[in-house]
Image (cartoon, rainbow, N blue to C red; front, side, top):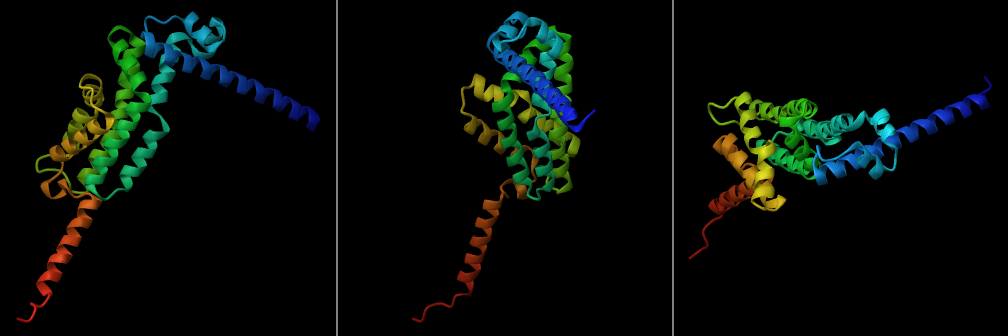
Length: 241
């Protein structure tokens, strides 16, 4: 085959791959909108196809029908790029209070970006094996991310007496698992900002040893300035009478 013919062939393959990916993406996005609006069980493949402007046969062939779409959405949430970025960042932090603050902030971000998928899967899981298996997988991934923070706090010697990394993970899950933000924001109608601040403070109080509880960068800086100011005042000679 000539180089020109090979390029033409590669171009055809590339265009076909691009079209297939665009079709797959359109169906996933359509399913996400419809599942969020009507619930998983109330949506049909025909509705997804119409919303995505493709044929029902294409949804089955490219996406594996509703079950395949649900699995794709679960992966989209539970292995999002934010997950690995959060893990890397937490492993680099040396301030226990900042570990908790950053984890809480990223949990909020994930909830705002993917909370609609979480709600759909959680609601469908008791009645559908695909949803149940997907929720179990996503939860393992979710807890694995929190476990990084728990281990980091343990490695920094920041945990309260009697709490090890395993128990710290359970406490993190209690506050930052599915229920925390959903309860405060959906049920209590708190803003995400208020919920984040409250959860961050609650986690710090529950997990961190007292000398680490308010030891964020700003607090440490203020304490250092106050200490320096106190020392300067002590050293300053009394004015002459």
